[in-house]
Image (cartoon, rainbow, N blue to C red; front, side, top):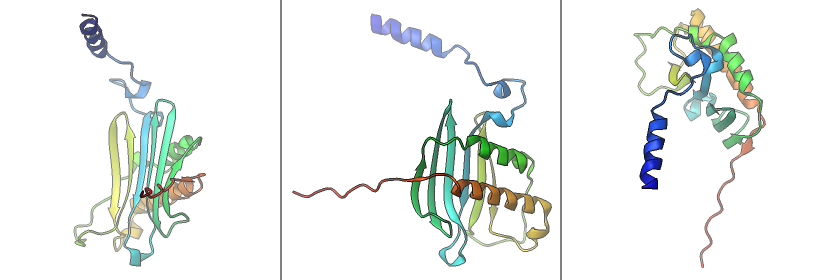
Length: 178
């Protein structure tokens, strides 16, 4: 009977509205302080000598978790985690300064390369993920202001990513055989 009462109480409490952060509440405008996750992915073919890595940075309450998988043409190679860093405000400031939410990339209808290298930046704010990506460098794109802003955002984020004090993820030892 006590278990049934405990379950009923837990269910009733789960139905109560939870307090949301100020910018995420109904009727409020989200702000950069509401950012919960940032990811950057740069992919290339080995023969292209382009930066290739995946970066993930997440905030859960007041705890921060970051990981990096670095592959090609970057200062590190391998799997890394970040511990005890106060870098979160740096990344939020880069997104704000470089105008992440105001970027508008125009697709090129003449671009028909299948499975091209893709660069992307994704930001989760108020449980909604906004992702901006670009398949390779398109001919003529370097003259587009939004493309230049996007490239600056990628460069600024990459500089900040590789300036962090990364710790290699330990490689598991092979199991001993009897």
